[in-house]
Image (cartoon, rainbow, N blue to C red; front, side):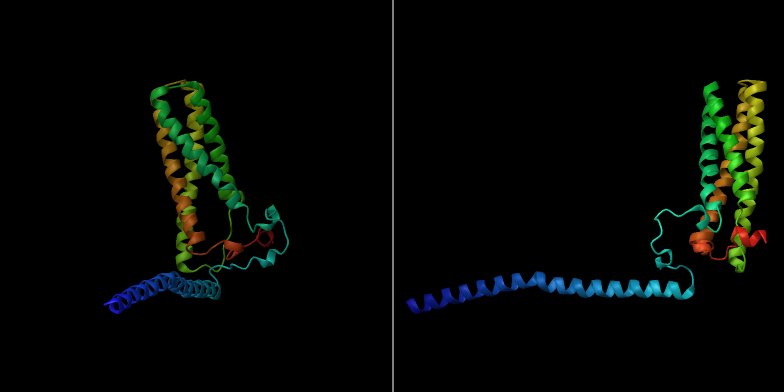
Length: 227
């Protein structure tokens, strides 16, 4: 009887020991599994990067800049358009929102903000669209179609913002707090805000989807265009 009890206890202890060993080995099993999975993911990511490089869509090799400063100089950009274009986007959107709010408030302080934002937004839109407009070459049919839409909305932005600036000057200094004049200015500014947002959409598509512009691809430099 005692022998049987000892045998049962030994079996229980053996079972507990095996269970503990199994539990201790589970993390290592999963770790190996994760390691294999991570290796697989790393391999897939490397293949994706190589595939992108092979097709010339993007180049992730930054060694060409060597030991240069993290902040690039202006002359390193193929074109200054991307540095300027965000100013009219922000200024015209804010001017439109403030102008719509001023329909209700009719505040002279808001008038000054609208005038300044609209004037600077119109100047920024003209500079980005005319003086620093990037000139592309060797575009595919799809790329050219997207660029044409971008340029169309950029032109609308320029003329609507200039028109809104002139109307805002009349509203502020001639008609002086006339609600209907503020409404007209708000409508034109809303059109400019819509146009600049669409120009930004097609511009982003051109760069980040079509691949026009990163590291100067498909773009002429200012010097080559001048010649």
